[in-house]
Image (tube, rainbow, N blue to C red; front, side):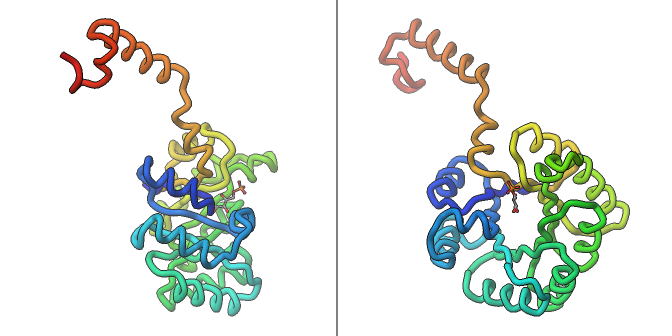
Length: 227
Ligand code: E4P
C-alpha cells in the first residue's frame, strides 16, 4: 500500500514525513507553481527531506512523445534517487510511456478519467496510473467506481500496474478507494491530517488523562513520573 503526499510545500512535507508512514511525494505543474520558486531547487529540497529511496513523482509538460521523453531523461539525470515520471494519458503520452519503458525510465500515467485510458497506459508499461477521483466526481461521474473498475481490469488481465488514486477533497473518498482495491493514494497534507480530527478520540484522550491526574496528582503527567 502506498501513502503519498500530493504537495511541493517543503514545510508540509517535512512535517508529514516525520509523523506519518509516507512512501513518497507527487507533484504536478500546478502544485509546483503554487510554491512560487525555481522548480529544480525545490525538487532537490524535497528529495533531501524524503531521502533517496522514497518515490518522487515529477510531471512532464511537453505534448509530443519525443519531447516528453527528453524531459523525462532530464529529470532522471538531474534529480537523484527514486524518480517516477508522470505522463498524461494522451495518445502522445502513451507513446512516450512505451518509449520510456524501453529505456528503463519508470512512469506514472496521470490525468486518468476512464478505465480504458488506464488499461492502455498499463499495457504501454506504466508502473502506476493515477485516476482523478474528485475531478471525476465533479463531472458527476463516480471516481470510486472508476478506481474499482481499473483494479478489476488490471487483475483480470494480469497487469502489474498499480493504482495510485489521486485528486481527493475529503477523507471519505480516500477510504472508498481503498475499499475499492486501490494500491495507494496521493493526497494533500491538510487532508491527511484531517484523518485524525475525530472529536471522540480527542475527548477520550482528555478523559483518560484527567482521571489519571486526579488519582495520582498533577505531577504524574507520564507513566515514569507516576508514583
Ligand atoms: C496527482 O497526481 C494529481 O495531479 C492531483 O492529485 C490532482 O489533484 P486535484 O484534482 O486536487 O488538483
